[in-house]
Image (tube, rainbow, N blue to C red; front, side, top):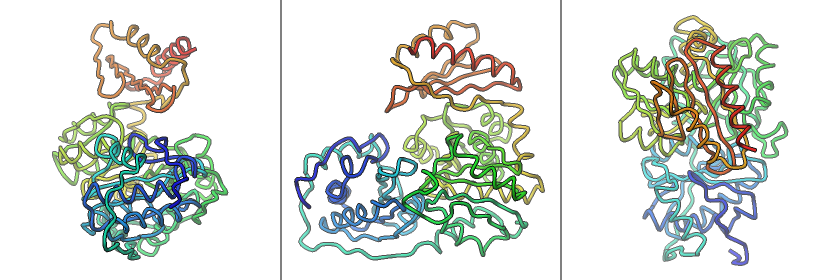
Length: 459
């Protein structure tokens, strides 16, 4: 590669690699990542997949050439979702995997998610900092005397068969389901599942298209939800599903087109796995917890709290041998999926429950939403996040009977309400989540108090 191309640190984040193409991430950087990954892990065989972004194919080719030059063979699984790289890496028993994707970032961005053998994540505290240093410094290791080769392999059929092991297809009934792939990579998986399930899929923004003609797929943003909700209402569908670009997260809408917060799905899926694995450990993040704790404890499970973020969740799941882990951000992790996150398994389990219990999705979550109302995550840009955090601590740590937890940011629990506030790792932002026990008025009152406090001291 031309050495004049700039290689910079900006694209190396806490959990993965993401940056603007080509000034932060380019083909030279991709080539070096391939060389270093092989040299660091002694990898002989690696899975590589890519999303639909216009730059993904060239970046993947450079990455694979670097791996080949270092002596490793590459199994190229082509256009796919991140979870298909996780699946293939574990299923094929190879030495690692790399997915070329920028998920829900702007169209001119791209990135990579890296895993070692067994689909163990490579993150800032497990190898990514060393890869960053060596890539930037050009310490690539020795080129192999005999370069490796690239072999194309289609793993869709094995992946689809694995997805179906999480449900009992015999109890499924005809459902009408709106599926919005956001022109990302979920569409081909839905097409592959279609003939195996008794569902009618109403497809929205279905074709993979790296120009993202309908906007970047990121359904966690409220302004992006109506595209799915409207079609649910217009078609009288039983539910709606929307994914981000690499479909490692799925977002659900009930039969009325109402968005179902990811937090309630954590409790829902925890229950599904505890019925399958009595007494299992369930991993959850600390932002919103009461609904999850109530469900897990009532079913005899063991709730385990860990820091927010996929690397922390996956590490703790392996340590605890947990059956399931979930984050309110709609990342859901499964023991039988190499402890990795999937955006396909959750909605399959939801449809199974709808059919088994003969109840709509709204009926499956309404009681939990009533018992534990939440604010939804509130983000505020502030001049000095640490200063605002200190003021919140001062106001809320002196109360009687207050329970304080610092697993991730600051969590403060009173008898009937609690909150978590965290600083963003990358922006001058505070992220606030508030929940209450069966009291929407109290929830609103305390949320408004905290937001006013953040805005007052955040100027």
